[in-house]
Length: 285
Length: 285
Image 1 (cartoon, rainbow over the protein chains, first blue to last red):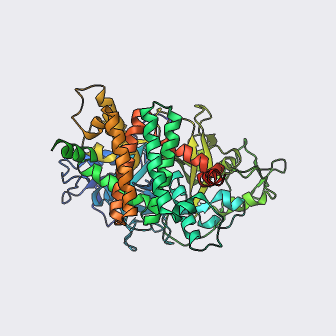
Image 2 (cartoon, rainbow over the protein chains, first blue to last red; image 1 turned 135 degrees about the horizontal axis):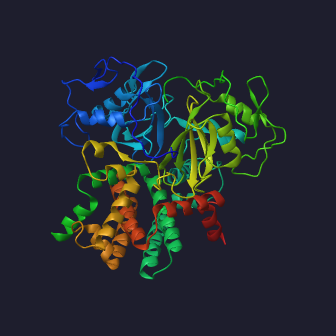
Image 3 (tube, rainbow over the protein chains, first blue to last red; image 1 turned 90 degrees about the vertical axis):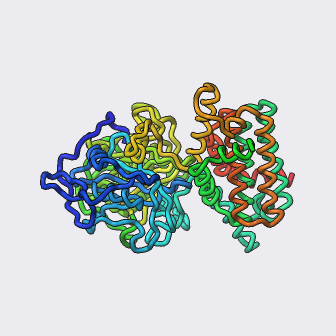
């Protein structure tokens, strides 16, 4: 929330006491980490040399009067907001430790790790705090659909469509631009299999004619390069890159490859050694 | 939240009475829309033929004991989570009507529209409800940085980096894969201008040698096509698409074009007439 200055305020109320986690209460209203636990900072094997680090972190959160903060789970590759819940100190500490998105259930007054029943865990790669430290992002990779309904995310009801009485208003995922485009292309692909569905479209022609599609991809890549070689303006570059993306995504749809798979590849390359380092080595050798 | 069945529960407590909006209270604890207002369903010029539609919608939200629900503002193009706040009935109705992300400030007990001071409004394109209707996404396009600190989003503190005592832990935006890659490329570009910074890398070679970069883009596009033409497996397609994306993004960085600009182009094309329809017309003529 962008409302006030960046303040690290200590919660002034005690948090609910929860049994099953590795934090305990020292009786002063402040939870301490049991000596028997040493937390790994995730993303590395390094152990926390000082457990007070995490206590300091937890102290810096602006917990509400119930000792809670909002936590949003987001797909690290696609950016899709998977679900939103609440966390208390224990849930956040548990997530840091287990790397599985964990929340505090207000209805059941207990911690719950997303996936503990369904096995569709959200594998948290990093956690972000907002400017006034009362809101948290779990940036992670889901093992499967996040929603208990089987939907990829919990957000599948479009208010605009509801108000316009559109069919499927209750079955329309909140998709950002690239995934909305991917969804449209996949819809055209499904229509191809049933010629009575939908109308003629460029996407369908491309899906139907591999040779045309590949010639378009090569042509658009060439046009993108020429915006650099011939020093064309930025808007032309953005437009040609749009063409490259769109046509390449039609190819992905034909091959049954999701954009998310591509991003997964990129993330692994960059987090391991970096595409650039790998290429650099290849180039130098 | 994926915790219970999809239930549309009417809030049983009255909501805070707020003066400046188009909703008023009928004295029964239930707010009604003033007859003088007719709401446009946004995304179209169509007027609501029945104002009860929005009342029905507001009634379907599972407001908490304070009459609030969580609202998350997300960039429709990049998927970046911009900020998170709370809404009451009035704030949500105001957003539907004005298409500017509006929240309820718990500290000031009033509505506030993001951007009313800074002019950095978030132009809402659609609103999504989660499965149990107590959490809302405002999917929109920000006019400028969302955070009051001037940061693009409010989430710029990495817990992992804080725990690892990393520099810049308090200045690291929550970036998903594609934008993390974009950020790395831009960092290499900045390093090029100061040869003492960083080490040699493939990205720097590409940034330095336009001819090499363009030959790589054409080569990778060709390799992507060949995965279709020569019926190679999916993992090869994903890998080649990763190469296309990476090299094309280096070109974007050289030209000073952000991926967000490209997505903006794609969104406008698809929401206006659709890239495919446009191409189709060109093809047919």
